[in-house]
Image 1 (cartoon, rainbow, N blue to C red):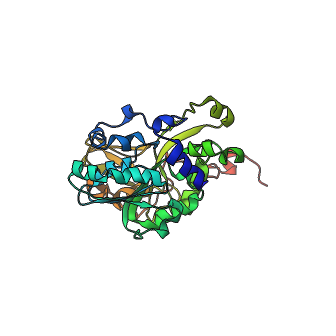
Image 2 (cartoon, one colour; image 1 turned 45 degrees about the vertical axis):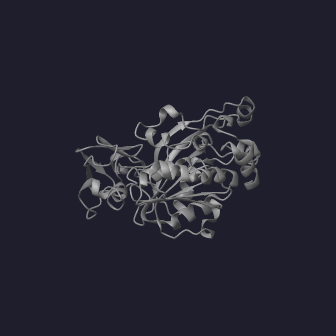
Image 3 (cartoon, rainbow, N blue to C red; image 1 turned 135 degrees about the vertical axis):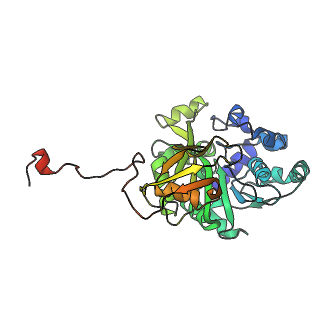
Length: 346
């Protein structure tokens, strides 16, 4: 499958227009603050973009960032501008033809930005321990529609957990299915190359993330994918695919459920490009200056990470009030006693 993917992305695809789905992001959906950064990236690099989401999380200045499956380097060169001259970005990819494009235009981008803070490595994202990468050495790891192409996703996630520092995050976009993809589709080279054959059933992904050390995966945004090739659409039948962005924090004290400790946060409005609200995930849009009740996990995602200085924190972990209301889960037992309901005993 490695060889099939390398052939598909290295030789068969000459640009994003050759894809048979609408996985690539619509340029009109790119936020305004990012457009000037993309405008400085070489046209050939942009034309070979095959991502399915936006993997530029906020507050990256000075960070060490790793991009898994960097391809021709579009996201690397965008991230390089966000981390600035005091930060650095490393791109890893297994396709030599894609890396050649990224390296070919490295001097061009150094001249555009006024600094050179990137490097590219040829390697496999399932075998990150074989590369010259420091354990615990990265603040943020990103990936754009690549984990689904891996033949060993557990190895990928465990490698990421090893490379992140405590409080670091894996922020990535990928393709997921609404059910487990049948074997016949998983082994089809074209469907695999189109990021469909290797897509995980979303609930399997959540379980895999937990077993790899990422206890509380947070969904940032999602959208349904359309298969634009009629033949592939027919073969997929009732399967539905989605592009989704998740953030996974490496925090040892996260709990399996959202527990309520009576805590709250107040966003100061100081994260660049987010003066009015801070979006942690799809369910946490935190308005500037407003007291926002949070569960213990959300508290730690803000207090024990690079976001801490941008919030005021109310409360502590001294008193536990049970599950945080509205975060899923619930008491599995009947709330009323048998005596109150008149139900017979055994």
